[in-house]
Image (tube, rainbow over all chains, first blue to last red; front, side, top):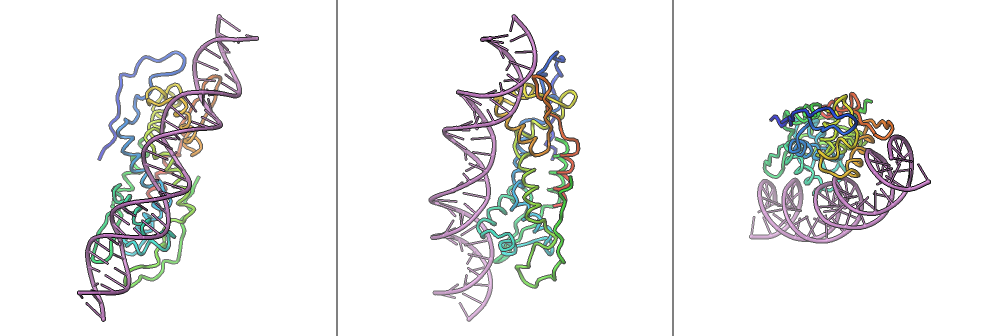
Length: 119
Length: 119
DNA sequence: CCATGACATCGATGGATGTCAATTTATGGG
DNA sequence: CCCATAAATTGACATCCATCGATGTCATGG
């Protein structure tokens, strides 16, 4: 994984008053972009509840029909949110016959949290 | 802080076919709303970089003028992002004379990450 | 007392996003 | 072969959000 890529700069001379160069040990623009994409996928009440509901469901998997009614959202909307979560690498989709089963990707949330504290 | 409020339910009986009740040990709607607000504040490349730059700056504090140029955004835009971060409880603002100094709130990122893995 | 610099707020605009209704695809049963 | 159900996709619409320019406020210095 490791999107950490510290942007090292020579640590310029200390400025007398204000306005030092900044961005010494800070996160790089592309790493920020990547992390923001992952966080944006989770930064929605419906999607947080979906992740939580999938994780708490029996066998840790659930189909759309399990999730539509308790969320209070229409089926296409739930499907859309699930798609966003799958594209963000947080859930996996497994279509078996009529139903599509969603599962939590094992270490996804943990590595995201780890990146967060390292920002 | 502690927005942890897990919504505990009696853990209903396993359903035979599909469509179990769901939302057993899942996060509640209002907890999801609150967490989503915090995550949304961070789910932006500019704000992630701002948090990182403030944390990496000398004395762990920085004024707006330190941050505008390396971010490549205008001063009002940077000010807006900093305001969002302050309102989310991630940064503190301390106006001393001409300059406004921003600092990272000590445990903010960590407790956010802890909430994330507990979703 | 006015000029300047740092910062915040306001207003406008373009783009992203959440939502639903309608349609489409696919599976399974009669 | 046709119908019913489950899901995904599409299209349309409303809302939110990031960004910028203009303006306002406060402190400092000539």
